[in-house]
Amino acid sequence: MRTAPGDLRNWHGHANSRTIFVAEASARDANRSSGEHVEQTLNRRKNSRHRLHCPVRIREHGLDAVVLTSTVSDISLDGCYVDTLQPFPMGARLELTIMHADSEIRVRGTVCSVHARMGMGIAFVEVDNENRERLERVITAQKERGVGDSF
Image (cartoon, rainbow, N blue to C red; front, side):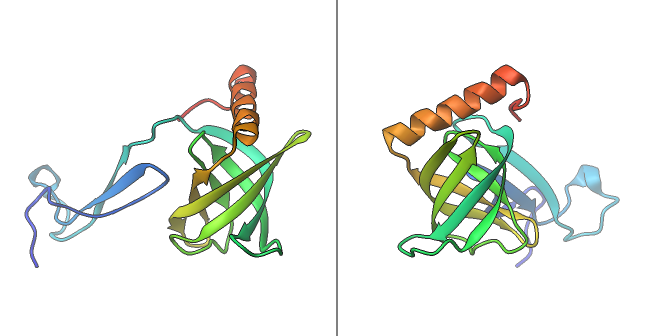
């Protein structure tokens, strides 16, 4: 199927964001070959992300054993990005324990973006009040230290 310039296809991306692939280059990009994919990103997050570098233990929902130990590279009140060479598949239901300073933040989430050999975005789907307060404290501390500038 041939598409018109600017026709949007294949939505995917980080938690609450969308990456759009334009099926055909627009007229202003005429120097590109017809059919080339041009990537654009729209941020649809409700809360801003903040850089954070801390360990995380991940297990599949319902299993007792930790399946993966890795690193969170950014976080928001709605989700996080985990750096890993072996991300879980899209839609996988996970239980995360994010270890920051002297506290642990426990959440349940769903994989909402996968970047092969790089990592995965996880949308938080269940965060109790105690863990939400811990998450808010971590983000506030990052802001105050100037380490967690939003992006």
